[in-house]
Length: 157
Image (cartoon, rainbow, N blue to C red):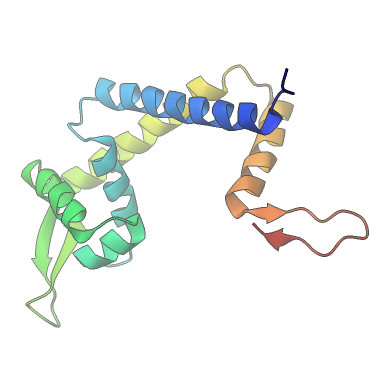
């Protein structure tokens, strides 16, 4: 008989939670009838972080996808009036992508859907549990290993 694999169980739990989060977010998005896919939603959120309209290549790099994937997403969002392609004022051969008013409204709805999904997921947890979870997730996101007494300082994983 083999010993239980606690790391394997933890990995499975993380994967199951990730799938649950995606399912719940998708359901909240569909309820709002925005006509935006999860991938398009991610592009809109990324686009909102730029101070000025980015190039398609900038979006591809930030999203860590190939430029063709961004083209497909932008095509769909442009057809729905959420974004528009605009020429770069300094180089008219360069095309930049900007949010439209409809895109900004969709982004507000997307944020509300994400908050509602998060609240649904976190509902079973009390305030203290949420604080602990937040700290743990922060550690995992940062990828640092906490230092222990007498050990070397914390290092990225």
